[in-house]
Length: 310
Image 1: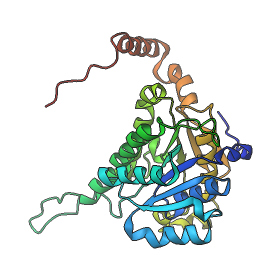
Image 2: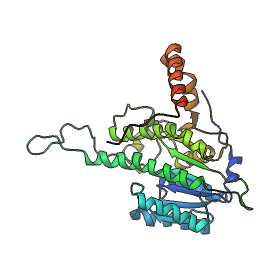
Image 3: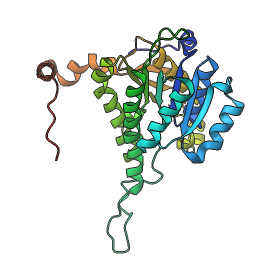
Image 4: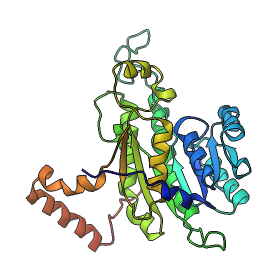
């Protein structure tokens, strides 16, 4: 078990940084923007145009330094819009140091519902499932790629001699577990964990740290349908502020690289390092050694050789 402590002394490192946060008009994203800004960071609140008023209200009433906060209307699935968001951040604040890929949605109906048929009894396509996967996985990939591109160019200045180059992916406990049966959400969040693991070599080559947090139940619009029953059951839960603290700690701690911190109320546990240590118990020593040899093979040939384009 790897316990994580919230070292609030780290928050002071936010001063002078520029933090771009997707899905920042409400919930965890808004709490994260408020926290970073309260410690002197410039914050870019990126979210959908229909949430403009919500984001503006956050900036007006909850952001400590409102002159260091902007809202940018952005659909993270739209490459041009997200690129413009990063460019707006740089035009306004001169750089992007930290990117929080927070945007996430969940299906409102079961995508595995076999009763969702047309008048002829033929199963209908789940269009909502495609949207969930687009936003949670493609949108996060877009944010990761643009984050790598723009944070790697951060250079020391007189006001910020040690610029941070950090990307934080908001995964989920559903990145590791699938028992709730929310198929599109779970599949997409498993994909976010895959992005975390897959990007490490490239990110390291650009001097960028990429980590993740995996929040358990947090009272937001996604959990509104059952949060009161959770409370009645007396179960531990998060708050957006608690998750925001975990996000800030992981994003700012220069020692963290490739980590994913589970956030479940009072519990903060890093998951990726214990997973690596437990591979021999999971796979067996012999298979673990073989898999290690296989990975060394790919390193020796310069990486996985990609197939020709179809």
